[in-house]
Image: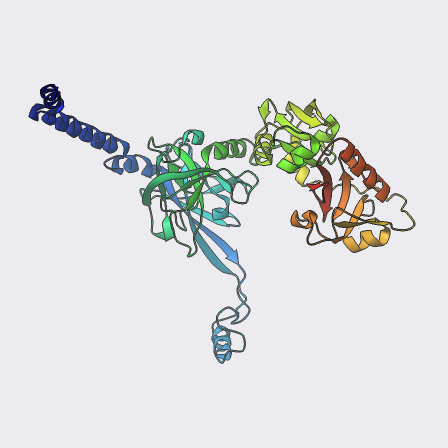
Length: 490
């Protein structure tokens, strides 16, 4: 038995030939990995830069501004140098005369007939817009249109011949980790190229229609309005903003996604302005406690807080509806709904599915135009009769009072505002934790209007009998509505 074990052991021991084969296989695998890495990262970006550079432009704007009337801003008020600077300004003419201010930015040509895209903040308020091309040629540009909501502007130049231009790519195809190239005029230094990767997608900064690509490619002041390219030489973003404590690049830059930009540019070319769809509702995200309070199985959709006069009201939408789908697309949250509605054609009739009192209801809404709606002034309805005396009630950590003319005046509410005023909030209560404060006005409880303490108490009883764990309140502060769900165990 011992001899057999020794024989087997010898058979399993690696021979020199086997070791050599293993070493060769490992070497081959290492070489293949190195080759794949070399393919993933281009050896040089020079060919791409040479291809796309002629389409990128530097933008210089000129604006007439009012001059200063004294030494303010040069020396502190009361400084011993104040008289000196005032005398200096007096010798050199009036200090309040107009002066010309310049600003720098970037842009790129999108058509051979001279359409140029840049940021709105690059050219905003400019009297003159000068375009410098890669070959040194200069032309004066005319403003076609702007969209402050996405910070995009469209310019036009007249050239003697066709201009080199770049196409837009599909920003939805950009993946985190993809290589990108930024081009522009950083800090007024002239044409410059930087490279990096897509760091994140679908970033929102502060705008309603934000859809930013985050990149670590160096973007500095002066890069605004310049293009962000993929490795195919297609524009997938417009460099717009940076996150920086010192004003310089720290590797966190933001480019407006090309799929947003192209829709804006198409409308600016056709109409000279944007024309976005308008549903006509105020909305907020659905939270877990709100979903439980209204019997919604999933935490998704957009909760309607108010329905002013407009397309949604005409279609029968109501306060408290939860919009589950729009034009056949599921609604995940308010941001997604706002973008989808804004991208829809004005005048289009769409199907909107809402959740209402435990059931789904399908509405057909003919969209209006947001730009026209934002300029409209709502009519004020006549004030209804008021109760003679105010009632108060302590409930769910809130001290509630019926509204009187005096309370409406104190709270700055409209004369026709109905509901219950929050006159005090227990700072140890859930209501306080969820942001309710004295001065708020509760207009609905349990998705029913409340104008008296007794109506509020009825809503509480109904919700408890229905087995709900929380009561949904519609709260208005300075006219802005939002829903808050409060636990009945308070």
